[in-house]
Length: 237
Image (cartoon, rainbow, N blue to C red; front, side, top):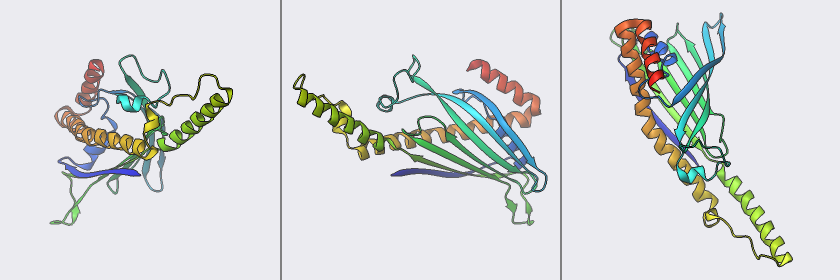
């Protein structure tokens, strides 16, 4: 089973401003859970005039107790939060007016894999048959898939082997299964994917608002206002 989320919206800003805001969006008042952002590589193709950037984001978030049970001991911080590593790849074509991005989590893929894609495009003005310079259209798609079922089956096989060994030794009797024993692998997988989908539905409006804050800063004071805002948000975080 795979869960999908998608949405479309527009910013009342030109593509050049929106694409710049994308690379300056962390931190902002709606994303203070982003601990750090580092650029891993950046390359420019002179033939296609496209810029490809790979970045690593570290995000801190609270994990639902039901999901936390599946993580190795010591994975969570004292406050119950965990740090997640997100790999982001983006390709921008300024001439044609589009930006394509893909982000995916590097850890806990066996629990829940999340692949998020954004498409930013400069639309055409149908009245003049020219690019629309004061609007940017955005399409978002998120794919969520859990592979926890495979882990559950393996765990139950180990339980069965332990129970058989204990019965043959006639010592302490069968090994007791944990709370997970009463769940089917499909039910657990579906529950985790639903939790991920709910968190995605809540986070997307915040992400849109965060970009709007950065865009407003760029409009009011350019680079300096955007960078000063980032510094203030970093100190608050």
